[in-house]
Image 1 (cartoon, helix red, strand yellow):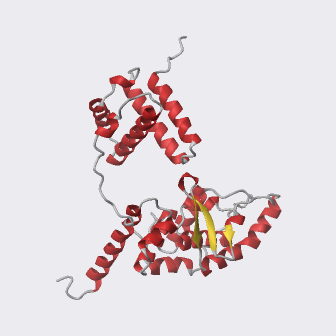
Image 2 (cartoon, rainbow, N blue to C red; image 1 turned 90 degrees about the vertical axis):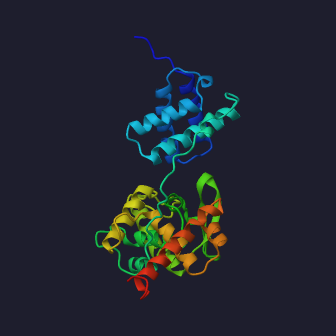
Image 3 (cartoon, rainbow, N blue to C red; image 1 turned 30 degrees about the vertical axis):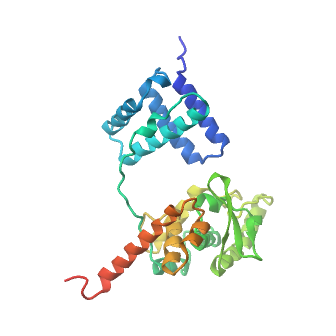
Length: 304
């Protein structure tokens, strides 16, 4: 039985994925890029890099549409290709990036539905759901996500010694291992302080007394992002919010509500850990949308 020969494209993709891993790219990005680039390799087969131009790449993207892939999926595949070609250029494998000559599919601008301040308060001010096996921790999760505007991955990465109680700030590790400090308020502080004795009890029962993670499961191990997502969704739905609520919804709510209450856009950018102000400016759109909804619902001459 003859062994399949690895093509030049396959070899390069393997090295590129390893380079992403060495740069501490997120697991989600690595998984998505690997899937997209394996599809690209299968489509072009044994061809050399010099054989592939922007016309052939357009043909490849057309084949993805023909298979029923959405514009979002095709745009992601193109982004993976552009990143691969940039890396190939740095390695001296190619002289130009044909993927850069291909237009990105125009995606519909969908703004996320953000709960109102009243809706979030209804969740945070009420008792945790009866089915919660670790109610003190679950309240701390909700308070930290909304109070600090942090990502799910940032939340589960927090260690006990990352909390600076005297300064009321938390050291957060964001994308690309970039660190920043975010403030936390009285509600989050109270929730965490209520949770800590229960955490210590769990760790003692499970012999995980050296665990550094702030948030742990009932087995004494660091909580996962998947578990946080499940906890947030179950709690939100039980309080009457939409079933599409997830941890990032509370991050959106943080940014939107801060802006509505008069916070400076650049201060919000700093707290959220956005590299570009344009990313933070999406919350301006969300706030304008909210204002228009209030106007249409309440102004006596808004509707005839």
